[in-house]
Amino acid sequence: MIGFFRKLRKKLLQEGELRKYLVYAFGEIILVVLGILIALQVNNWNIERQTQQEAADILVTVLDEMTANAQIVSGCQAELGNLVRAADSLRTLTGADYSNLAIESATWLLGSVGAVVRCPVQTDVIDELRSSGNLRLISDADLRRAIGRWTTALKELGREEDEWSREFSTQYYPYTAKWMSWEEFEYYLNPDNPQYYKARKAVDPRPVLHELEFANLLALHYWRMGRIEDRQAPLMQRTTEISVLIQKIQDAS
Image (cartoon, rainbow, N blue to C red; front, side, top):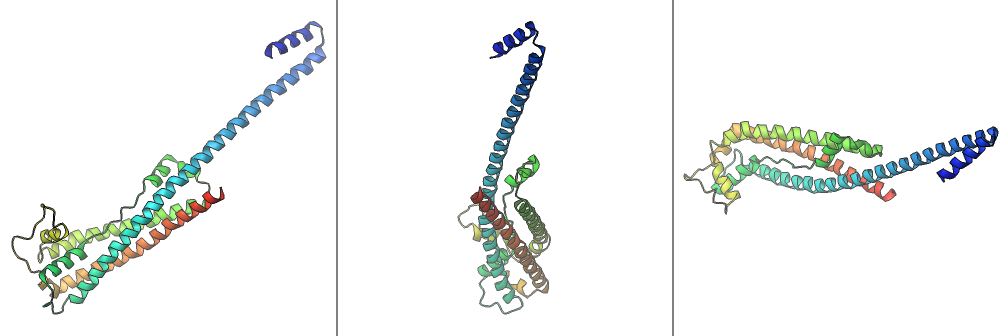
């Protein structure tokens, strides 16, 4: 084909058909330009299709992570609920007659209430999207805002968990260690683990229930549990919100 056009161009020049040659040359330029434009358009289509596929893949990974996180947060809420119930039981015993409370039960309650729940929420996908800049591939503005709200809720929960952990390690644990055997509590948690065993010396932790300082520490610990609950709830809500938005986008595509 190229050879044909060359021969035609040469023939027109040899015959002195300048006008026809110019028309031909202009037409050839138009064809070249059209070819370039078509190639660019095809390339743009390919890029757009690839971008859409990447965005669709991102939605799948985010949905998977949020589905897993919904189960994780739900488990954390249940675990925290157990601690709150244990704290409720212990609060009714402070300052009261504990003659019917077994030593083992007192140790179990004191240790259970002192536990700190950290929710191991998964953030690998969201973190990677932010670090790589691929979060921009999510075109839905509502979904991007939902991810931002989810991140804020997670940070607020993390700060509250940090405070809870600090209070436990600097206040609750050092004080209760004077009255109970934490080693024995670990034995109750892991009776089949040879690393843990009952305390060598019998320890009766029940007298601590009459101490005002312990009552105050327990009240602080209980208050912190309530704040954790108040941070877990919106995180669960934001996690569900993201999942619902992604499913709507997928159904519409």
